[in-house]
Amino acid sequence: MEVQKSILISASPDAVWPFMVQPDKVLQWYLTFQKFEYTSEKRSGVGSTMYIEEKAAGPLMEMNFVITEWVANQLLAFRMEPGAGPKSYEQRWSIEPSPSGCIVTLWEEVQLPYGIIGKWIERIAQPKSEATVEKILVKLKTLVETVEEENPETVSDTHLELQF
View 1: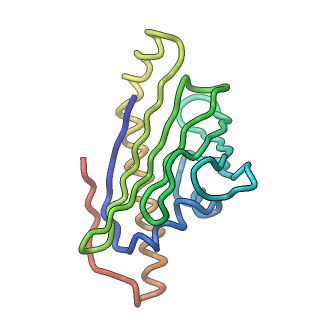
View 2: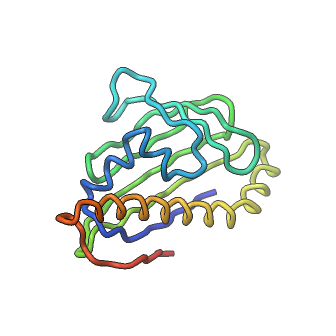
């Protein structure tokens, strides 16, 4: 199951980036994450590892991830290490500058085990997953723009724009 959604945020990429890489900030907007922490000594860059507990549909998932792409103020991508939970799980969070701030895109691909039954569950879960990602993006937008409003020298004017 693949989900990709984008939102326009009235802030610069460097204002959004800390919300993507600082665990305390990630937990403020990523509604299904219960825990997000780095597990390697290296806390940034490709090869860093993370532990994430996520409660979406179904039971709490406890997963280890490795960062596969890291470009400051632009891109964070990570892939689940083999273990309990889904058959595979990848996420990619990107930030693109725009004239009125930046466009943040969240992409995720989850493959469940269980063969044909897993595919059937993915198909049923798709609409809910899409709605959840939209809510997550709106929460991120609200948090970042609130911080920007508290620091008016970096605020730009725009409106909420979900892209499907």
